[in-house]
Image 1 (cartoon, rainbow, N blue to C red):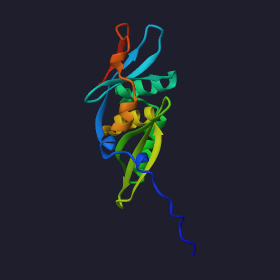
Image 2 (cartoon, one colour):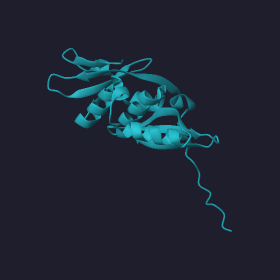
Image 3 (cartoon, one colour):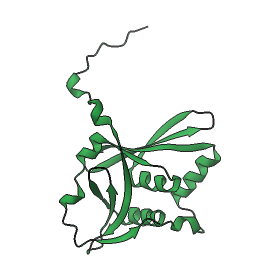
Image 4 (cartoon, rainbow, N blue to C red):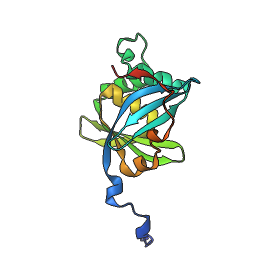
Length: 167
């Protein structure tokens, strides 16, 4: 049997433990600009961020954020997924916004089944927001990723309309 190669890890490439701290965040509002662009306003301990939404993401997020999914006669794909995992005796344990690469924010959803087996899946920020609302799960962000996202306070946001507030 061959031994594994002995590779040295550069200490400068390892994240400091403080960068991996989890910060609780909340989807506060969905904002609409005068030119009909929509944004998800996410609040944390030290700053607020605004994430641009395309029309599909904005519609799906607004639908769930306002609670309209509770009385709909047709389920969204997120509701179908949630019902499927529930039928499989699996629960969403936690949701984390893990990293930001370029303008993409990656999230992970951590699951646990009835045999206490744990697994996770990587998804988009919007899917994580929607599933956290449906499952009523507290959303957390890794400090290192949070620090990479521009604050909403830096924007000129006086002309934005707060379209949706949570139920």
